Image 1 (cartoon, rainbow, N blue to C red):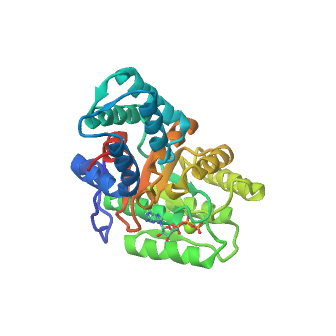
Image 2 (tube, rainbow, N blue to C red):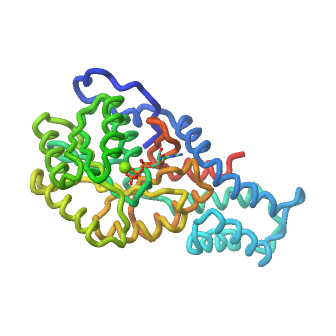
Length: 331
Ligand SMILES: Nc1nc2c(ncn2[C@@H]2O[C@H](COP(=O)(O)OP(=O)(O)OP(=O)(O)O)[C@@H](O)[C@H]2O)c(=O)[nH]1
Ligand SMILES: [Mg+2]
């Protein structure tokens, strides 16, 4: 799994299977991308932790451990993950004078361990189109993330159909139509106010008819507490499954990283109602609360599949725990 780099979408679909761009890009690119995306979080975490040390090192005692804990919490990683890091630092260094680098190395390893996940990549249907449903609260970054994901898949030579399932706002359909035009892929839209489930059905239908590799369906933003709208998601799922049994293969929950701990209550509601299979953490670049990846991972057992690192079509990366952990402390 690796960061993907921009490639202009071909005007004609490439014939045959080309490995996705993410498989072709190097680790170095991914690290750079993460590193710039995590600038704000790093500013909080890196600076704060550096402040704990004097040039001659620092004795690891209760006071130091408490100060370390308080600084970790500021990144919105929550008490569970921060306590585990505190305990690990205590276990290794209590009563010793340590240097900054030693503690940072321990924290990085601990974060990496906590984020270890088995399956970060996108699911793939055994046959027929892979259907991806994208859900989340208002403004979390759903439509933009779909644009980025579609661009990535298209750049890898895949054919796809987008479904403008947010029929609530005309601007939403317009936004996705512009992305589709730029990327060079099909889009299915419904009339304003049309049943989003019918747009989802038609999108899957179109993907099957045209032999597309992927169908990606946008939905209107909703709150996890709006039970009628959450039921609507269930209806969308049901209708998709009716057209293509077993679909959707992925239900991606887009969370706004700037929401920090609030993103957790969102994830709770959505993962129960919409049977989410993975998370896209958007706007990590604009957030000083990137530590929220840890509790999300800890509490939901849902893999963080992608992170949004800007507003452009190329500003997305497949989530990689190693790069994430290292980028948090890079100067
Ligand atoms: N900096 C930054 N901005 C982002 C990112 N992803 C989305 N945005 C911005 O966030 C705003 C909302 O993004 P949308 O994609 O429209 O969000 P949405 O979830 O589709 O919104 P609704 O359809 O209204 O619910 C836009 O201004 C995007 O440009 C990201 O990764 N980084
Ligand atoms: Mg939208």
